[in-house]
Image 1 (tube, rainbow, N blue to C red):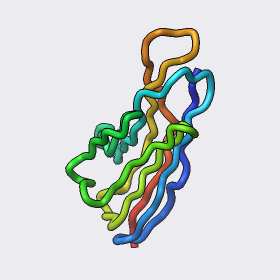
Image 2 (image 1 turned 90 degrees about the vertical axis):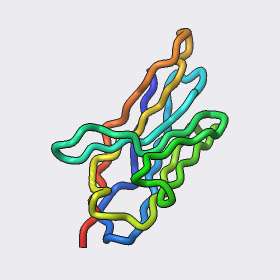
Image 3 (image 1 turned 180 degrees about the horizontal axis):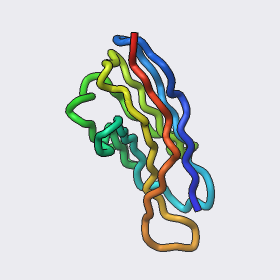
Length: 121
C-alpha cells in the first residue's frame, strides 16, 4: 500500500503564505501524479492543484497566480506553496497520490487524512 501524510497547515492571516508538504511512502513502483484538494465546511471537495511526474500542472482558477505546486520525484514528495491567502481558502487540504503499487499493474489513488488551513485575522 501507499501512505501519504500532509503537513504544514495552520492558522494564517489574510495575505499570508504557507507551504504544504506531502511525502508518499510504501510499496511504490511509480508515482504518476500527485495533487492537493480541499474541502470547506458544507462544500464538496475540489481540486486545488495537481502535477504529473513529467511536471505538467493544473490549477483551480481560484488559486491561479497564488499557488505553486512542485513534485520532488526522488523523494515522492509534493509541495504546495500558497501566497496571498484569502479567507475563502480556509478548508481541510488533502493530498492525493496516483501510484502503481509494487506487484500490481494499474494506478490507484491514495489519500491523506487532511490538514486544516484557516485563514483569519
